[in-house]
Amino acid sequence: MGKSIWLTSFVKLRFHPLFEAAVVSVIVVSALIAGVKTFPGTSQYQDAFRILDYVISGIFLFELLIRFISEKNMKLFFSNAWNIFDTAIVIISLIPINNAELVVVGRMLRIFRIMRVISFIPELRVLVEALFQVIPKMMYILVLLFIFFYIYGTIGATFFADINPELWGNVAISMLTLFRVMTLEGWTDVMYETMEVYYSSWIYYVSFIVITAFAFLNLLIGVVVSVIDQESRLDKKLENVNLEREEELLRSIQNLQAKLEKYNLD
Image (cartoon, rainbow, N blue to C red; front, side):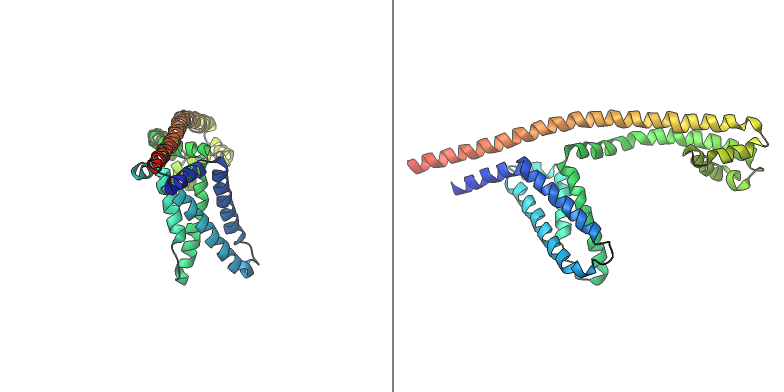
């Protein structure tokens, strides 16, 4: 009877908005403390920072244990990549590091605790998941972009190498120069230099910028927006699944309570 009451409390606490908001607040505080440590004159507060770090690690461990205990199926819990990510971050932050050479590494690893905020905010989850989903599709776009870079780089090395070997000496250097042109960083200086010899070379630069900086950029944006829209729909479905899981857990615990009460009455 007492166990089922505790389970009910853990389930309600886990899915309570205030609980999630409190955990996010602790994550933000942890990140702020890591940033404050970088300012000069804070070395005298190292003991206070160490105590706060222990407290934050304890809160994270408590939050993770609540999620463990209130989970009906542990396999289902670890089938979620975000749960594995949260568990790994908490475990890493709990590892004691006594070696002076590894203290800096330990501090760096603890800084990554701020990434836990991603798993608590659905909008951030959607963006990160969309990023991973869009990478394979971006590869084909990047291959096509490389082809244009290679074509224009070969043309540039052929015609402009005698004008400025440092910018157009070979196809590799030409492609690096074209990357500068694509980012629109001082590209007019490069263009005016070649226009002194080949006046019509402006066509070369303008066409390259239109193809790469504008056309390919819009293509990438279109792919990202499409994937984000798909991930948003999937995330909404997962939220509905989580609500159903919460209701199922509460029903199971209530049924267990009813059976125990009936058993006690008998």
